[in-house]
Image (cartoon, rainbow, N blue to C red):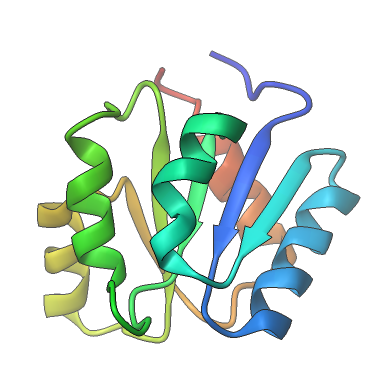
Length: 127
């Protein structure tokens, strides 16, 4: 399935500058991107916004990305919502934890704009 245009992307990162700048970059690709800095709001925003892709930080206060991904996978399959870890954790065990938690991909920060475009495209290449 080709990438929906515009694709709806939700960026979640507890660092406001990181979340906003990533959402703005995605908007320059022609997609509808929104951002959150409070992980506690993710489930409600996902239900209302219905993103195709969720770019989710791992290390956040109160609710970490792995816990949030496991929770979301109870309601959303990979066909309904692609979840991509965008994180500073790049060790092999972090990648394994992401897969076990229901992430579709795991990418280390900082992410370059061409890689981000490829990730968005690959989220739909086998769907």
